[in-house]
Image (tube, rainbow, N blue to C red; front, side):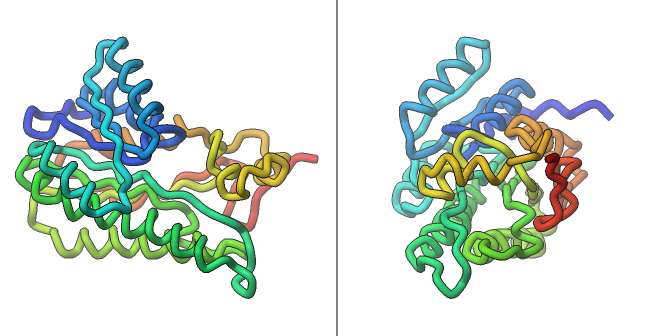
Amino acid sequence: MTAAAPTAASRIAVVTGASSGIGAATARQLAAAGYRVVLTARRKDRIEALAEELTAAGHSATAYALDVTDRAAVDEFATAFRTIGVLVNNAGGALGADPVATGDPDDWRRMYETNVLGTLNVTQALLPALTASGDGTVVVVSSTAAHATYEGGAGYVAAKHAEHVLAETLRLEIVGTPVRVIEVAPGLVKTEEFALTRFGGDAEKAAKVYQGVAEPLTADDVADTISWAVTRPSHVNIDLLVVRPRAQASNIKIHREQ
């Protein structure tokens, strides 16, 4: 089936965490699909550079520096964009890989604030505009960590489980309105920053996450999945799409070449 072109009422797509990785790749693919993309992230220089790149390629893009954990800033952002068709809640991330017994509560708190409360803040603020568009879509980029646990991952797993439940509950609560809720749960994705951030900049530890995996997912792979789900006909809702590399059977079963 051919992907549906965005309608005039739903042609604006907001992407959080658009400064790198999956967020930036998703912004590029939605722009190519005909959306005017609004790029949000804390790093203003990154999203401004991406907006310039997309504009130079003939697309429509706007950069807006935003911390999704700052509710007042999110509410102010919402007043600037009255007509929105798509929201991609991508901002998030993992911190640390310690066991429950020694995990840093500050890391847990930061992960919950970004992954869960950040998604809540932006979704609440933009839901009226998404509904008013007559053809809205909320995308929650969770993780396979939202559906199964693994040792050393409890803080991130807990946050992503909460994000999954947020999406699932929202879908129940707004059924009958012209808004879809899509969850995309990526598995092992190799990006420039995810593992490096998780391990506090320790490049050696970050590299071990992908060691021996010939072809982990890329940001473009996940972005392609998101764009495909968003561009289905309006009556089609992709409730949950789990995407992993072929080498990964589960969070704890990954084929690594010697």
